[in-house]
Image 1 (tube, rainbow, N blue to C red):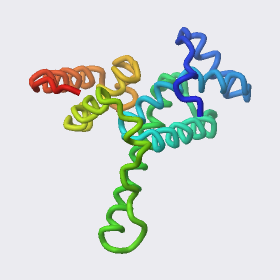
Image 2 (spheres, one colour):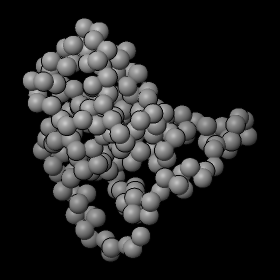
Image 3 (tube, rainbow, N blue to C red):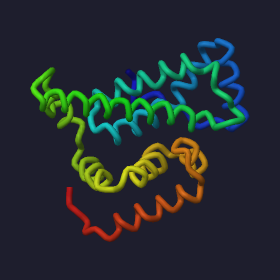
Image 4 (tube, rainbow, N blue to C red):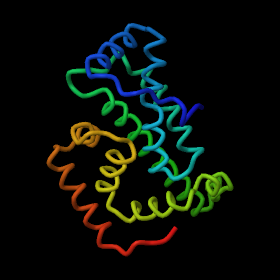
Length: 191
């Protein structure tokens, strides 16, 4: 997967609508362009939420596979494309955590495979600054963490974040303010 090398400059809203229309009509070049436009932000969102590179890459791939499968059902008037795509990624991340929780429960009850231990790949992924940030974000309530990740890691607007999380823009702003206030009150930790 070419995560980290795919992004293109953001197109205008009209250009993006045309690109989505072409992709819905089966234009593979348009599908490729949609992938390149969004892959880095989707990967960043998933990596920040699932915590390791391998799972983030798998979920990024699944997100774009689901995008291709569901493109004919996308309604541009109902939601912005980026918000729709991030909602797919978010749902896949939730499914990932549910599956991991079930696996842990099976392992603790003695039936089934043991959960995967932290691997060298996880350690290699963790740049100290990112690890500190991830730890700080992990202490926030889920809603606040999602707002900060979508807004500052993925670069979504308040309207897009609101659409992804099925909240109002006012609620997104309130969650952002609370999260930033909480983080500001904490002592700065060295990496």
